[in-house]
Length: 114
Image (cartoon, rainbow, N blue to C red; front, side, top):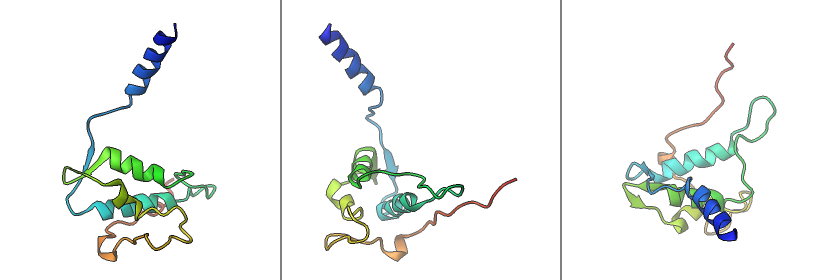
């Protein structure tokens, strides 16, 4: 009985797994990371709640390292972590900022539609 239950749980968990990934154009990883960082800061217009929220930044790092590639190459988790400090107010010495020339997009609220 327990083996059958575990097999079903494993089968269910594997439904979300994939061998595929999303490819970021070569040389534009930091532009993509900037979009992710902006997404974290996006507020809903109706009640000023965050559009997306996570308790820790490592969730973002792991998601990007697992499901994205840059120029069809794996992205190092350690490389990504430099841009997602645990404490944004005091990022620490290892934190790196996205260079202005790679901030290609700006996320902002759309004008209200009637």
